[in-house]
Image (cartoon, rainbow, N blue to C red; front, side):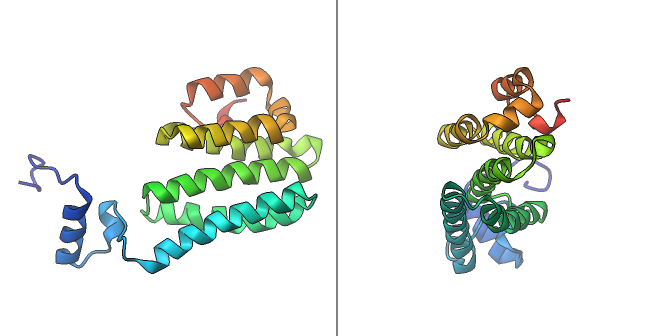
Length: 174
């Protein structure tokens, strides 16, 4: 019945049970094993990394913040590309992208601020697609409070349009 598409497995427990029975990694079926200590530690480390980068940026060390966030964002994006699309990973990725964009806004020259706006735009796009109001507010506060100059670099009309629509990353707005 599952093979023909007439029955769908939608609960987490059934997906975990199926993954164990078939000897597949749980992430291939779109769930993470709650007993996976490595996965839990990675999420906690990522949150700590974002907080550390924010503290570094606020104390005037924007380059250090970027150096902390770039490897985290790269690792999270590679996890997503490998099929780890759990909600917790996506939320962490959106927060890391937003903080990276703001940190880049502090260290890049005026001509290159579009790169900072692209990272914030990617975070906005992801926050809108995840339909998480807290994450969307977090990202919008970063856009308004810390990255006014990057918004100016891409144009206020384009930034407002993408903020309202949430249909695609700001990076595509030219």
